[in-house]
Length: 593
Image (cartoon, rainbow, N blue to C red; front, side):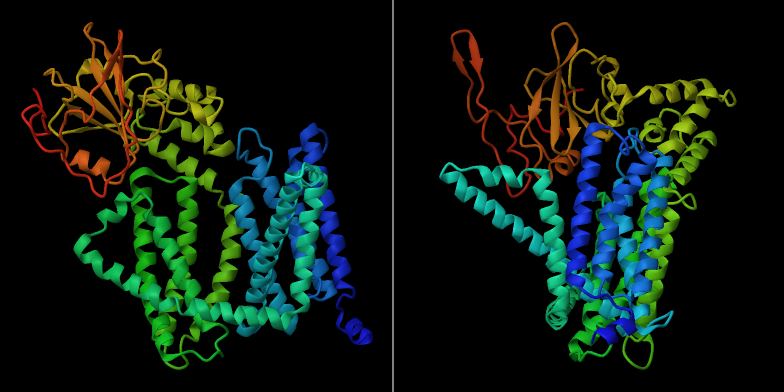
């Protein structure tokens, strides 16, 4: 057996190697944390520290997975390539100055590099197993789903491991012994305990390959029977669109994530049913797969339209560029799966080529997004500045703070240029606003204004107008005033709530509504807030005029010279209905002039 293993170039002692890798990873992570706390080298050098963070987190996972799954030469080369890949992305993340205080890789880099490594590892593992540049689809399927199950089980093992330690600490605590609680709270113990337990779990699951494949088969079978459920939901959703239109979907503010998530679930469940193409599948599930493949382009098409509308209306942002990239990936799946559904011959056979092509395209997209090739911040800043300079957006509406905090180095460079640009009729105002944005120290200062005239207010009823005195009043010394310290648009309602014949003003958005009234000296004041304003349907009902003033359920209690008001423990009702109209309760249709 030893000679056979040597001939194949496989590793011996995989369990010991994995434990060593787990220990080395623990030492690396602990050292990085300590140097970061002390602000000494390498933490003092972002161009070194940031790549080390990514490498310490992800490269050990490649070795753990590949130590018995890849040939020795392949694993060494792939590990070196992964190190260079992670270092390159991390260095670019630092150079582009993703945050004001660059310290750790930005979250998108964390997330997308993990996806890239997972996809890349299994493309390599399948090719290495069959000694072909492009492996057979069953090899790709086996490598990806086997390691996916291993990863899930290993993470579950580590979670249970810490639950057991926590239970043990609690048991000792009840008898007055806290040594275990103190021990598990120390990073000197917690970090190696986590990495070593994870490495052990990977090895335990790896030596029982048949058991892992059995668990995978059971899991995929269970998932496959969710496909008809998701298919029925998808059919119902699509069939409802001609009657509801797309506006309710746009009103959610999260149409694209919702649609892409639905498309991802359809793709996942379709693959869980198809598996490697050789599994026996019930006829009902075969039809469900075809139906899901036919419906997929509809979801991807609507998501594409949603992103296009936002870009057309408001220009590019990094988030919209990433969303557009995800849609490009989804388009490949949608076209490929639709072709597979209608292609004659063995059912869904073209799906196999689609999955492999999409995997390669995902790698290309991630490399482009997180390198200078197609940096979302660079592209978004160029587009937004173009819109400003071409007059597609007014100076007052332009988001200079976006350039400051979301445009990375490119945004701040653009602001510096705008402060020096003297061309154009609005150059002076643009330069002033650009300088103000550069002076902001953190994102929490964004959109903090002192007058409602500087806030995007939608006034209701539609024929009502807000008093100019209210719009021009300076609230700078009043402390926190709702809608003056947020970048979100707010609604304003002209109402009459206290029966004095003078209009009050209700300002806010779903979850936070405040009432302003005019005092005897003519100055507006913040009278209070409405609760529970977070209930579903409040904003919609207010905008539609379905409201009425009503007398209090409980009277105030006057104690000496003090008036005490009862703060009711209110909750959300099943619906939002206007209170009964009375002579003393003016409604939205009986507003004072």
